[in-house]
Amino acid sequence: MERDDVIEYSLQTHHNEEEGKKIRKKIWFVTALLTAITAVEVALGAFIKQGTDIWPMVKWSFIVMTLVKAGYIVLVFMHLGDEKKSLRNIILIPYFMFVLYLIFIAIWEALAINDALQQNAF
Amino acid sequence: MAGHSAHVDASTLWGGKESPFQTSYGKLMMWFFLVSDALTFGGLLIAYGFTRHDAQEAWPIGEETFNSMPFLGHGYPLLYVALMTFILIVSSVTMVLGVEAGHRMDKKGVVKWMIATIIGGFFFVGSQAWEWYHFIHGSEFGKIELADGSQAIVKGHFGEIQNFTVVTPGHHHKKGDVVTEDLMHEFQHAAETGNLKDGMINLHDGSVAKVNKSADDHMKLIIKKNGKQNKVGSHIEGKKAEEMYYASLYSGVPNKVIYGANLQQNEYGPQQYGQFFFFITGFHGFHVFSGVMINIIIMIGVVLGTYHKRGHYEMVEKTGLYWHFVDLVWVFVFTFFYLV
Image (cartoon, rainbow over all chains, first blue to last red):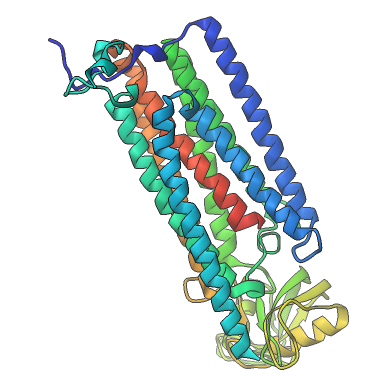
């Protein structure tokens, strides 16, 4: 008897040994990249002190490197890059719209509160 | 609408004979769950950012707080979290290799890579336990409230306590007794409760003993809360730092020093810092733990041949999605909690 509750797969995702080799090569490349980025981050974090002149640049480079890492994890490891474009968009676009707005409004508010607190303190 | 499904394999179709985005129902629902979970973590990290930006300089700095390594002690900023990050990335890689093996219907390969992933997951959870242990116990110096009301965290090498020599006898100790056990614990407890005064310690049995302690090295006070003289961000080093630190520690007044962390207070910075640390890393650790459990369950299914009989390893792919998500969250926690 055919069970329709367990059949839920697109057979396109099967691949042969040849394609597997290519995919594995890509996986190892991403591994090396993520490891290298993490190593750079730790080195920068350990040797460049917060509050120095170049710190703001380092801070932004951390954020950029994090987004690069996240991008590779989502698009390669989670295969979102191989899904249909419409699926990719429906996952990423609403999320980014919401989160960017939330970041903007939260940090803006926080800085205003900090300002007010500092003026009262002295 | 109907034309959409024309070239889709019949087995992919959902109940309504459609296949949105040409994905299976299970995978799409996993993505929906991950998006909502990502919003939860996003909300937590943004709340952290909010609190941090209104606290500004008083907020602790990652490399000041996390600088311990197992077996090696202090002075290794960020290395341990970097190792944790690396472990999690590697376990993510082994997981994706397992998924790849599944696409080739290579059962042995799937089992091998899933075992590696599970081991990596356990390593990460264990590392997190160690990290929490350190965070809760804190440093040997603690955070000190100085004479002018400012608060400072202390860096440097804490001179070892050799012993306590009893000067005034109590219920238990006679005069001239030398106490050599549980010294650090007794010392810190006495410091918190105001039982250290002028180089002497009041022990539990009512006796008073002299503290014999080696000198500290390279002591540095970093001011974290404004006082009458010291302002946030300023550093005090050397002899002057030692004088100020011990004047407070041996003042005989309780609550001048805080060791480690709990939900009320912590030695690293504002109260919220400890709360965010426990909640965000704890919530993430809970995800890792449940991820390991789910991986184990699915691996048992693989070993039993359940998915092989089904003709595809999509279940491995779906747990894989969850596992990569856990790694993804950690990438952000690592940056915003430890690096910036």
